[in-house]
Amino acid sequence: MIAGLIFATEPAEDRPEALAATLPFGGMTLLEYQARLLIAAGASHMMVAVARVTPALLGAVNRITRRGIAVDIVRSAEEAAARAHPLASIVVIADSLVTTELAVRAIAAAQPDTLMVTTDSATPAAVERVDADHVWAGLASLTSARLAEIAEMPRDYDFQSGLLRVSVQGGAAQLMLPGSAKRAGHGVVRHPDQLASRSNAVLAALANSRVDWPDRFVFTPISRLALPQMVARGVPVWAVIAGAALFAAGGVAAMLYRHVAAGLVAIVVAIALLSTGSLLSWLRGDDQRARVQEIAIAAAAGTGALLTGLATSWDDGNATALVLALGLFAAVAIAERTAIRGPLWWGSPSAYLLVLLPFVLAGFAAVGLAVAALYALATLAAAVEILRKKA
Image: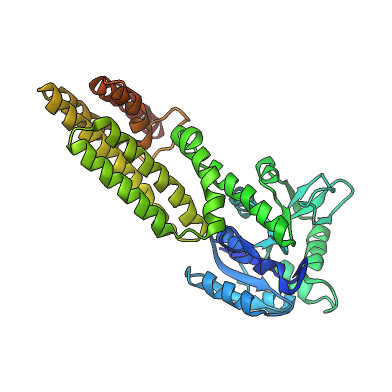
C-alpha cells in the first residue's frame, strides 16, 4: 500500500498571503500536480501537511478528492502518524517541489526508508544536506514508523526537516535523482514566474515520455510546442477533441469522394491533435478522456488505411488495394492485442499511417499499403516470438 505525504507550508515568494503549493502550474495548482504524480505512482491515500489552511488550498484538496482518493489535511506529525496506515509505504514530496512522473515512480518503487539524493548542492534540486557528499532531492519513501518517531519529538521541530533527520539517523538508503528529472527542472520553486517557466519544462518532459517512433519524432515535437500554449491559455480538452473530430470527419469525407491524399493528411492532423489532447487530459487528471483519445487515434488510423484501400480499388478497378488494407488492418489488430511494448522500430496504428502517407502523396497508394502491411507483419512476428519465449 502506498500513501503520499505532501508538504504545503511555505508561502509563495512575492505573494506571502498565498501558499507556494497553491500557485498555478500546468493548468492546475502545484499541489494538484504533485498529487497527480502520486496517484500515477499508485498512491491510494494522501496527506497534505500544512501550517495554515487557505481557501485556495481547500479548493485544490477538494479537486484532488474528486479523483476518488482519500485526502487528509494534517497539521502535525502526530496527526500524520494517526492517519497513516501502519503498513503503508509513505512517499514524501517536499514543500514546493516540482518533479516528474519518472522520479516519483522511481522513489515509490524503492524499498521503504529510501531518500532520493543528488550530489550537486548548488541546484534547486538540493533541499537539505544529508551527509558530506549528498543532499536530499525532495523525494523519499518511508515507513509509517518514521512518522511515529517524529511525532514523539518536541512540537517546535520542523516537521519536514525532522522527518528527514530521523530517516538519515535510521540509516535510510539513498537513490540518485534521475538525470531526466534534472533536465526537466526538478527542484523547489516558490516564485510564480519561475514556476511558470518550470511548468513549461515539465510539460516538455511529459511530451517526451512517449516511446513509439511516430510520437517521438513526429507528434512529440508538435505536443512540446503546443502544450505550454494550451495550458497558458486554458484551452479545454473538449476543444482539442472537437478540432480532431472536424479534421477526421473532413478527411473521411474527402476520401469517400476519392481525394485520398487530402483526406489522409487531414486524418494525420486529427491524430496529432488527439495525441496532444491525450497528454493534456493526463496532465489535468482526466485519465478516462486520455484513454478515449488514445483509442480514437487507433480508430482514425485504421479508418484512414481502409478508406485508402477502398478508394484506390475504385480507381484501379480491382480489389488489390482493398485486400492489402484489410490484411494490414488484421495484422495490426492482432499485434495490438498482444499488448507487448517492443523496441523503437515496432509499428503502431499511427506508424502505419505515417508509412502509408508518402506513398499516397506520390500516387502509389497500393505500394504504400503493401509496405505498411509487411511492416505490420514484421511487428506481429516479433510479438509472437516474444510470447513464445515467455511461454
